[in-house]
Image 1 (cartoon, rainbow, N blue to C red):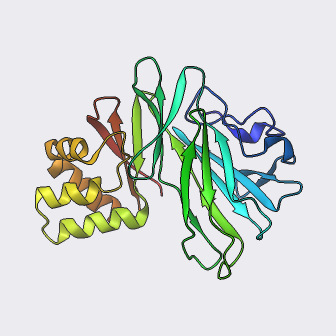
Image 2: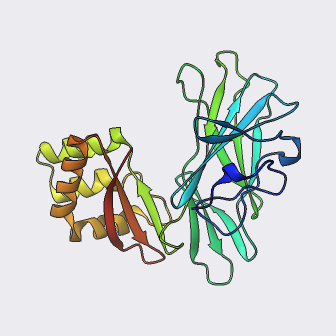
Length: 249
């Protein structure tokens, strides 16, 4: 995995754990030299009251944009598509990067979220011009408590052949609880597939889960018991669930 921590500035883009192309950060020319905080590379904007923290992980990259006050911009542009690739928006609010020639998915970008200092959700959405992904954050409201944190997450895995979906500790426990309640196979698949990126789709996910339901249930129970999380690996473009693993949260 290539680490952004090795770079001193963000002008030419930052390397990610998900793509051979560098990820371009918002207003890269206006970002200062990187600082390391809590294991993340942090770039402070010099004039506009926000900072960008980059956290590469195996198969992807999390970008946290922290808005310090109401003077911060309301939109943030990320260059995520490489040569021959295009950004597409999905109906569920997430986004994806596809190969223009084949139409096959290259990467997935989770549905955006933003919260203020009190943990209250702030309205946010994606727009795109085809090459760049723009996160719009409607933070200039009277009842917003700063700082506001916004997060797009970009990921592929297994040498770019799969999309990986990692469930948080709370999500893993939620699914385990449904297993303990005696959920049917259909309900189990429905709960598990709710957060699956649109590039895979809920129906494809449900069909894939049905083939390995018993073993997968046991994995969620074991992971939740031990404070771990589950990561699913879906082959693209077919959406076949080829494997899963228990990981640290």
